Amino acid sequence: MIYLILAILCSSSIALILKYSENRSMNRLAVTTFNYFTAFMVSLIMIVLKPSVYLNIQEFSLSSLESDFYNVILKGNGLFSEGSSFIWAVFLGLVTGVFFFLSFIYYQKSVNENGASLSGTFGKLGILIPMLVSIFIWKELPNALQWIGIFLAITSILMVNLSFNSKTPAKINPTLILLFLFGGIAEFQNKLFQKYTIIEYKDIFLFCVFFTSFIISLVYTIRSKDKVKVRDILVGLLVGIPNLFSSYFLILALDLIPTSVAFPLYSAGSIIFISLGSLILYKERLTLKNKLAIFLVIIALVLINI
Image 1 (cartoon, rainbow, N blue to C red):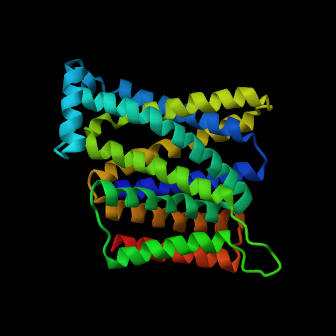
Image 2: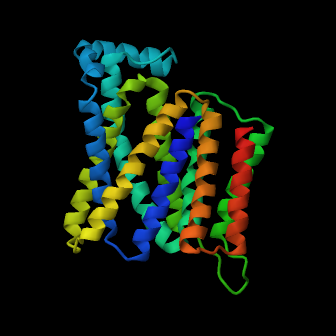
Image 3: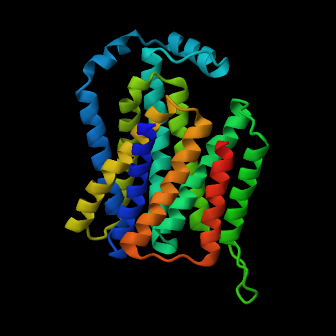
């Protein structure tokens, strides 16, 4: 449980630090770039410090990968071998890096537009994606209370995105919707890694995730030609540490705690800490509609957990 608590604390601190950067109109892309620079450098250091973990990589062959793919993913038997785990960690990390970049950009954008509390709520509500995918892939069917939780979660999405004021036309909030989608897909990649791969290869996976995100973000930062200030760099370097370790500790937690327990507790805990931190640090106030939406999400997550 300690890994899950550490993941919650790291996840919550990301939104609170980003709120600080958005309040000061910092260079969003620069903050993102240096955040990923910190994350991939720290993960690289962790790889260098544990070289013995990767000594069996030379055993890899295409035939063994094909055999592992059939037995592990299609048949659901055990985990990949050392060599296949390395390849899966690299491949999945490269794909995940794209979604991490997109989710982080929309996280910052949403914090600016909707506040840290609501952004944190919708970012963590993305657990519905790995949960629903698990229903179809791993046949993890929800019970009656979990179905109610899913319904409440969807209701909260509609509540935030639709206007109840007859004088204000109903409109969709695309930033929150995209944050929900990208965040959910990114979280699901962590589960995909943990489900099939030897856990010791998590450093390789995280390095590929954050290095890919760094390259994409660096390209966009250079193309934007916006001025990069020292404070952009410092905030980016600071937020990169909890960004890396939120995934690091979540993967460790998923290896010890069932998915149906870990994801809801991770999300609900992050939402609560973000809301409390926003209230204490930034005096952030929510509308009654948004408070009710967050309340429904927390109830939904508890029901999903049950």
